[in-house]
Image (cartoon, rainbow, N blue to C red):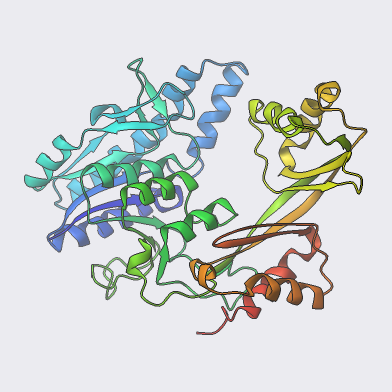
Amino acid sequence: MARIVMKFGGTSVADMDRIRNVARHVKREVDAGHEVAVVVSAMSGKTNELVSWTRDASPMHDAREYDAVVASGEQVTSGLLAIALQHIGINARSWQGWQIPIRTDNAHGAARILEIDGSDLIRRFGEGQVAVIAGFQGLGPDNRIATLGRGGSDTSAVAIAAAVKADRCDIYTDVDGVYTTDPRIEPKARRLKKVAFEEMLEMASLGAKVLQVRSVELAMVHKVRTFVRSSFVDPDAPGMGDLLNPPGTLICDEEEIVEQEVVTGIAYAKDEAQISLRRLADRPGVSAAIFGPLAEAHINVDMIVQNISEDGSKTDMTFTVPSTDVDKALKVLSDARDKIGFDVIQNESGLVKVSVIGIGMRSHAGVAASAFRALAEKGINIKAITTSEIKISILIDGPYAELAVRTLHSVYGLDKS
């Protein structure tokens, strides 16, 4: 017997037929003798509908009331799934975030989980009850519902798994695992059996959409073994309930991976923009003058390149931001122009960041050189480069994104079984 947290996203619970299918997945684990908690998202499209209603009611709405409205999507799904489980003979009960309770901070709309008391859930497990929990929500210090922001249901599931000391957290989605790259771009992409937490964190932050960054961070901190698998397969298919060898991708500690590949995967992020500040005075404090105001405006800066003039008196500073933040970033920088002291500001949108990721890169030389050589042979110009122990990120023009992904996927042998 094991203790499992199962999480189902919006597409997995999009209508009653899919909710019944989810109930069959849950029944499979219960019949195998496992203790089960289920975390659900709102039905596909419902959260967007609820958000649009709050904006229609008032563009400048109270964030606390926004949370009260938006959290109702998960409440509906949890109740419906509990009913569906009861209908097929499973002892189930729905829980809202405040009933457990999942304690959060006061940042309504983007709250962070502070504490979960899993004792009542564990007691119910002992009674053979399945907990069906509304994801994406908790209870703030003001005793009001607080939602967790983007990826909140994944975060809820991993946090609950940590709180109840689950053997595994299964994230059910519309794909059957984590692939070496996006199969829509490279049909030869392979599903990975195991990925280290650190690799998954890089992949999620660099464009892979399978898991949200916050949930991977939480899993890594609490060492919650997390399994990505598809809800759109037959729940009674061979191996679906086998804890030793389930179909999907296991996100786990690096120590569990015996044979580490040099490169695990290729990720990409579209809609990057580059901003360049020309002829800055090269003096202490200039970087703080640039990036401090951007941080205060909640603009995420990624790749940073600095070029100093031959005499050392002037410097150029180039960095990337999401394309959606370009106008805001330009205004922030223009307002701070006197303090920063640049001559010219330039920007370019429509760029793509392609990243090579792998924990095996720590112990292998020449990984970056292989990437640069392969891209040069395809005539792809590199605009900026950043590296860490386990990743290389390369900024290129948008039209070359798919060619670059396929080229790098091939050069590191990821297309070979």
